Amino acid sequence: MTKSTPHIKPENNPIAETVLLPGDPLRAKFIADTYLEDVVQFNEVRNMFGYTGTYKGKKISVMGTGMGIPSIGIYSYELIHTFGVKNLIRVGSCGAMQEGINVYDVIIAQGASTDSNYVAQYGLPGHFAPIANYELLARAKQLADEKGVPNHVGNVLSSDIFYNANAQATDKWRSMGILAVEMESAGLYMNAAYAGSDVRALGIFTVSDHLLTHEETTPEERQTSFTKMMEIALEIVE
Image (cartoon, rainbow, N blue to C red):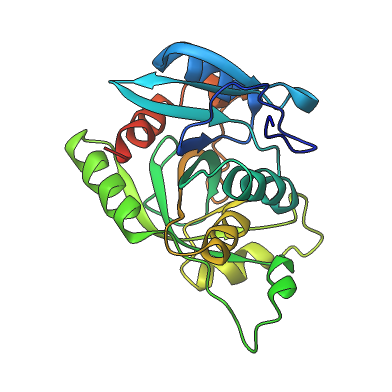
């Protein structure tokens, strides 16, 4: 029987054990068109495009996840539990919160703080800290340094809120050393942790805008110009 879910219907096309997960499905298409060989499309449900191909002889998939923890929560859960994906690497954009971080710098998310209630489903008797897989993180840091890519490793904020009515929220998170804000990684890290030790997750980001300096990139740049981050992600799993 062909494996499928309500959101992913591969129609017998393969999904690799390593999947890159940009939020934007057009960024997934860009990665497939630019870097992968022998590409097949394995998903087009809801226009959340997914592709599988080879990169330097390795089978790799790439698929959009949409915006927010609920969206990546659905896609990463199905990739893990229905299709056997083992390495899930989010490649996205983020808004920097700290001085000394510049637009186009790469941020590697060691941890993912959140204002989401996603963790409540596990019924834990305390506060869970969503963190990346260390092997993937260490390899990403090594590759970024080798490529001469300005990078920062630390805690990001996975927020449910893009337009925040609390004007002080950013300053409070910033005071706790949060490097940048994005919207998905905490949910991805929780899904990976819940799935067990053989499932690994990491978030890598390109700074698309800065909450202090108000610098920003265009939507077109976000879709196609974050190539250094993409190349690091493609080479993490050997």
